[in-house]
Image (cartoon, rainbow, N blue to C red):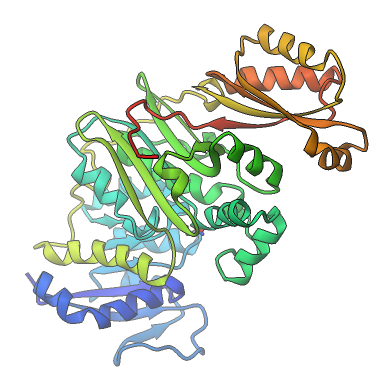
Length: 447
Ligand code: HSE
């Protein structure tokens, strides 16, 4: 084993700086654990003129691709993000026989098939612990620790920014724009928060977890994705009254060999651990036929927490005799097939429906008729006179909110029923509908 592990880092933003900091701060610990120095030969940055806090002797370049061609560099750490230069850098590094560590969820979700195939062909390692749920070691958990299981479901809170916004709306009664602004002021949400609040970031992570759980490629463009943009505080209040919290959930389940997956805001019962994940935290709940259920909780973003995951990958490589080995990148030995997909709208779950209706006779009868015709059974119904003002401001008419909780049904049935009721004028505006997260029945997570 050579004495040093020589790395090049592309990107010195939040995660890259955290990595450089922790490599220095934990130097002695790392050496004791691996018996090798991890040395940074070069760092690629966008703006080479900006002053950087780097160890002596580290080369600074604005040409990220030069890391791929440097014969001294054994591992390229890609922390620049994006799917253009980052993709080129990773592919070229692998072509040149280098192993790669990356935090790039978008790249691995959208171009995973190409990247994993090249890693296998070139027999190089691809470390991506930091790409899903930040500091939480979910990649290693699914790929290694739970490798002896048949996984039945993976669900989680995979976006800290959205979870922060929802937590603030829930605990302080903020409306969506106020909570978003607060997240932006704290530096949690980007100036353009779309990736986080529209569910795409969580969707990227979910596709990676599906690959690890079931050894299949789930085409990212086929994943059903809904975010939390514009969520009405009324729904947070109603959910609370029924004993639920609204969370942005990424969920995938094995339904008789088909994968049912999606990212969506859902009602989560307060007794479930997921309901209690607050602020910018992430959590992942995994069910397997040997392990039962497992719950992982931690910071999903941030400089040191994400660097912790990158370091985990680097140390794993440093411990190997040869860093150039594709062993278990995906966790499966063969080329991965495409996932057989059960469309999310065909999956069964209970639903929450908020209908905005005139407060007059016959309305409930009309709703009950259409729901019955679509095969949907009610579990609970409440009408709130106190929502009259909110409704009037939305519709300009005298109206109230009627909240219906259903027994198990499909998204297709809910869409059909609410569409018909809007078309025939019973609903004054389109209904707001959320899935209610089904617990597995053995959900002894405490009250
Ligand atoms: N922006 C993400 C989040 C972290 O808020 O969780 C990086 O994926």
